[in-house]
Image 1 (cartoon, helix red, strand yellow):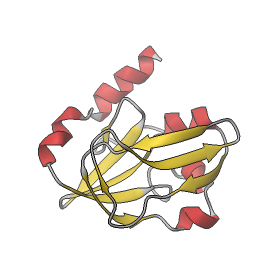
Image 2 (image 1 turned 90 degrees about the horizontal axis):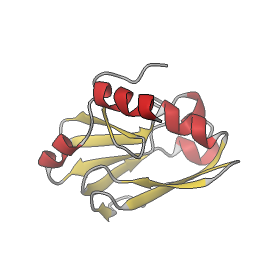
Image 3 (image 1 turned 135 degrees about the horizontal axis):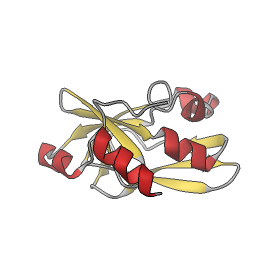
Image 4 (image 1 turned 180 degrees about the vertical axis):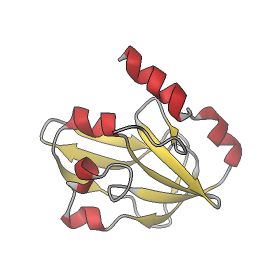
Amino acid sequence: MANPRDYLYTKDHEWVRVIDGTARIGITEYAQNELGDVVFVELPAPELIVEEGEGFAVVESVKAVSDIYAPVSGTVKAVNEALEDSPELVNESPFDEGWIAELEINDESQLKDLMTADEYDALLEEV
């Protein structure tokens, strides 16, 4: 699966899709492959205020427990409640149905610190 061209990415393998000042966040295809079968997702609390780089969710797989870091500062406006009963959506559809949370972005200038799809693809070639 190719990384969506209109998303932004972090070096920690999170993706960000920005729509009208809201950042939808999940983990990339590469990240879910590395984790293996996801068995639990600890979602952030609605209205939680997070800072860029702060852990705000947890993905647990058969191999590891991994923090999910906020790619931008903001306030949690929505969480993907479907993951509570179906955490495997992170594996099956990491860029669509497997999203984790949506943040109302506090500072859109932080988006410039994220990677484009081409930059993220280049990072993956080094791994």
